[in-house]
Image (spheres, each protein chain N blue to C red):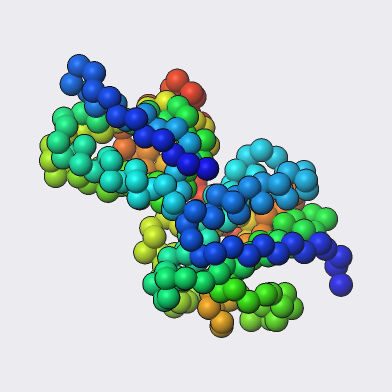
Length: 158
Length: 108
């Protein structure tokens, strides 16, 4: 199995902790050697996923926890955001995961407007597991070589 | 990780100076401040010089504000936007419908 470091962060499902998680990802990505621009992209992407999880938790119970997992690999950073407090079983999550589908239970991301669109635009790969709650798994590669393998293309007309 | 909002009125232009981060935590406060201004004032200018982080929750606030200006015959312009923030407006296509002046800080 490919070696990697795993960092797990758990925060209350409250909007005031989104900034705390941004600092966490900023620190991890900086240590890995991501560029300033990539780090800013990662901060927006993770905030979008957590905003979704916070709204979801609030709608359900008004409380709860969000679990964030960082898979630190040689060539990439994998970020998992789960809208529940349970710990990750990385293997299990990956078994059930796939590209997000139109019928996935991710209405919050859509209702939120640009949330999912931005995650998709800013990360190299985005997958969703909605078997137990919603888990967003997103990947950003350290080098250009990994970019675009999922074919996400955002045109920015001048 | 907070947002300060400072509202002044000079020569009929209402200037909203933002400093800090706009996310799901701070966006509600921003919305509460900006929406009434678009109803009550003719020209609302939002100064982004010191906004160093924004995500889709912020975009949502400005989409609501833009709708409100259309309904109340007022106008809104966003000025002094940093590259990173401008980029979000750009990739979401909002630069096409919003009055954004990013020349001072340099748009992309």
